[in-house]
Amino acid sequence: DSGVTQTPKHLITATGQRVTLRCSPRSGDLSVYWYQQSLDQGLQFLIQYYNGEERAKGNILERFSAQQFPDLHSELNLSSLELGDSALYFCASSVGQVDEAFFGQGTRLTVV
Amino acid sequence: KNQVEQSPQSLIILEGKNCTLQCNYTVSPFSNLRWYKQDTGRGPVSLTIMTFSENTKSNGRYTATLDADTKQSSLHITASQLSDSASYICVVRGYNTDKLIFGTGTRLQVFP
Picture 1: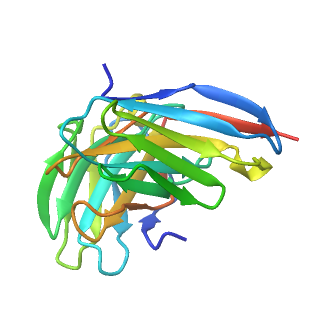
Picture 2 (picture 1 turned 180 degrees about the horizontal axis):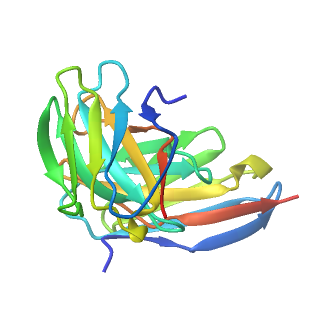
């Protein structure tokens, strides 16, 4: 158990809908990262927050947004969902910005 | 062109045998390099993390090497076990940046 908690574990929704994925980082970790992993693909970095502020942005679509709350948990919002958004979405956390990142077990999103 | 390339893409070995996975990167300047193990459908788990000044680091049967001059790293697995079947991902962080750059991984299958 990495200490990073992601909910829900599975999510099935229809095209055009909006979903929110939640991540609770390890206790004491200030950095939260979000990644997307499509079937048989590598991890694609989406966005990173550090202590509530956005620090780095990767290949995140405009339909996607995220935020980190004062209690350091983070949410990834996916809207106007398309079939191609079906993937595993991972959250990772680290103490600072250069430390080892620990991954959650992911949320498997299926868009039908 | 991906800044972190791994080879081979996939590998099949027999239980008890050794194997070596390769990672070449072009990220420069470079801060650290990590190897992760990812079981299918699960979150990646860190195996090793090395800074540019480290040449080798071991974690049980896993030994990672790093040549910062040639920008190459390898992960050597000794006396493989069935539980080593997974994807192994090389991840590089550039100097003074928050982004982690992921390779697409090597899928290892260990057969009895």
